[in-house]
Length: 371
Image (cartoon, rainbow, N blue to C red; front, side, top):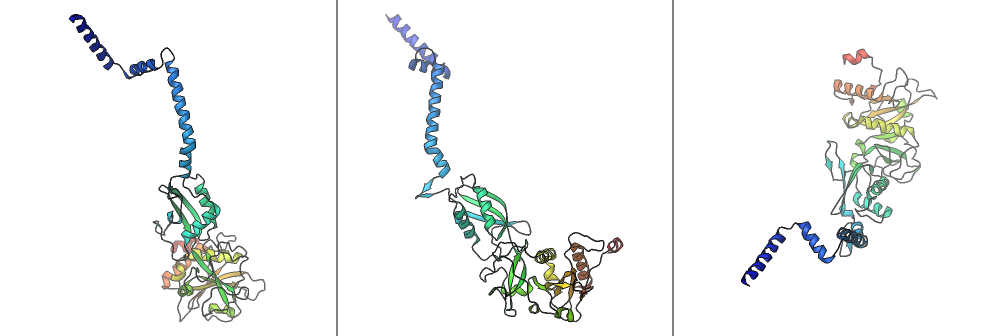
């Protein structure tokens, strides 16, 4: 009897040792065999997995996708929504660095303007919206201060970073006040008003509150006065900008629209862009249109540009010339190079005692080599 009990205990110990040595698959098979006796255990496992997968998809469709698409909420407000405070506009400075500071010539709340236009064009400003970037890019084309959208990046927590190129004022166009009452004008010139143009020839805001050029800087800013009056040809004495009657207004004066109805305006902007900082360096005051100096009395004389300095020096620019069409044509870049040489040689392009009268000539290869 004692021997039989010892055998029973030994068998139980052997069984426990064997169970400890069983692999996971053997344990799983043993467990499933107890639940599902007989063959077909693998098929049973597959059925269970498929059932769990279907159940997961049902719950994801009902709850998970809604959470992913709409995002979590806090106090009834969607936490994934873009607000005006969650938009960051950055732009690249002249030295190549990025800045979030709004340029000094923009006086309005550009962030609020961007956000309001986004709300008008799109009700769902969720960062989970796959079309958000494209919608933002399309909407920002309506903001006249923004010339180009370079990149758009989304972040979570909700944040939208947009790198843009801002339009900057390049030139003022004096427009006759007879054709449009009001406008922005200074104390010494009330018979015309100024229309500011950007470097890509788009009209900028004209109202006093958002006018991009401070009043104290109007006299230093490039200005196009239109065709020169008769007094311009009668004497070489300095002629003030107030002697000009100004240009005809554009078809539309809505900010952001191109001034596209006058080729002379577009060419004037090109010249100002090419000169850049030289405008102030050379002491320039305004540019205008004059008759061909070779034959000013001819009714069919070709209209050409003339740049006038503060002390009355005249730079007879001629036609805006980006590509030469005739053998004797002087390209605009060559004109700027000649002005640079004159400035370096004389220290200025303008003296009160003796105003300059500058014309350009086609340089030969020999002249270029010597210089």
